[in-house]
Length: 62
Image 1 (cartoon, rainbow, N blue to C red):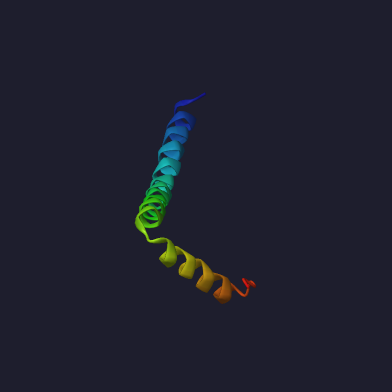
Image 2 (cartoon, helix red, strand yellow):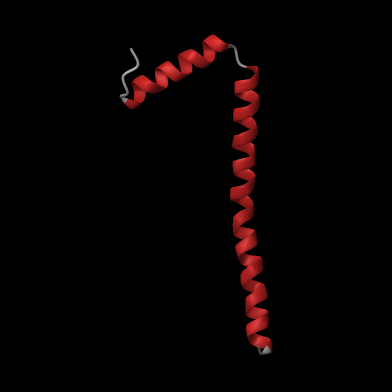
């Protein structure tokens, strides 16, 4: 392995890691929102949200 391929390999690894960071942060934020949003919501709010989502997506629910 020559020096150019080693440097290229390190740069590619750093570049791919930098590309994954925003996706990982967004996923963590959405996950935390879902856990805390659902965890502290009242059950009737969750039922109505699921019911409205089913209607919006065209799935039968009754």
